Image (cartoon, rainbow, N blue to C red; front, side):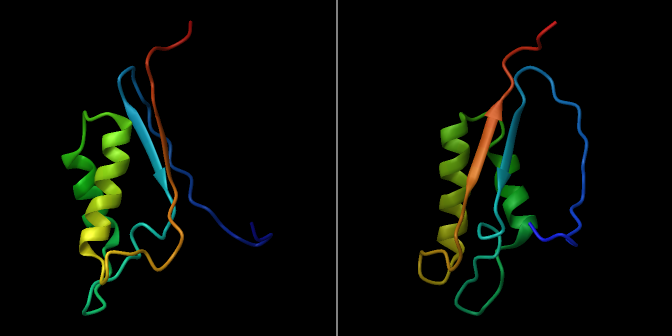
Length: 91
């Protein structure tokens, strides 16, 4: 990380059964044949359509949707997708 970098902080309350998925910018920066970017809107739409699925299915679905959009079925940047599902709260 750069010393002068600024990162936005977002706080959300999660509940048992909720999933949290994080990803690198390579996922939404994929471009198609006319150089349109996949973008955050398409990524979020894809994520919403996968709500309730297993984490593996969410990861596969997000990756697959972005790859289907991309110019040659490949990413031009590195991609990382990680996440977790909250099973229960500790008291």
